[in-house]
Length: 283
Ligand code: SF4
Image (tube, rainbow, N blue to C red):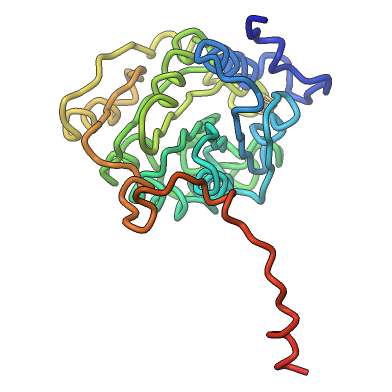
């Protein structure tokens, strides 16, 4: 029987606000998986805490929810244990750029064969709208009623400064284009970073669909990192599409000498070991 989007739906009612960009993101993700003929039993999805993280209940697949900012290490563990699975790590801008930024850096450096979806809604939404590194500096938020006292981080610039093998940007209001981008990310053999500009009508209502539609522009992929950096720096025009890809760098697992020629996955090599003898030493 042909795979359908409904095969990815769950019977749990999600808690997202009406008009939330997470609806478009999940629609795009499910469409991408169906187009790639991936069934829910082919997929591992890892989430952290946040409105994005509540999406763990909204999609079928092997799902894990971890601590805030820790979606990437969960995904890395799942991927290294069994490379037959398609592993997707899902995170928000708050979790990624605050608690989780170390994991982002090392996952890019390691080039694990995982796809990272970043829901950039420009705030910590689940905890009622505090400023993150991507919140506009002049915007009043809870805890910063006069605008945030800290600087900002441009996700594209940060990622591209780390020599990634794949960086793309999508928009929650263009789910068809986003589905195509996610497909490219999953097919890429390496760490694929996809920043998704997400509307959050509750806490960043000024960045609504009208605001994005005036700025979003599709672009072609760039030949060099410096061209890609120029492209993502400008936030007056928000360029979307696969912006940079390097197919020449091997992914992490392919560079492991001690795994070369192995036919099994690590998950098949787990053994039960009786450690009673070792514990007796401490008695
Ligand atoms: Fe979506 Fe914002 Fe509501 Fe969270 S607070 S569910 S991100 S609209």
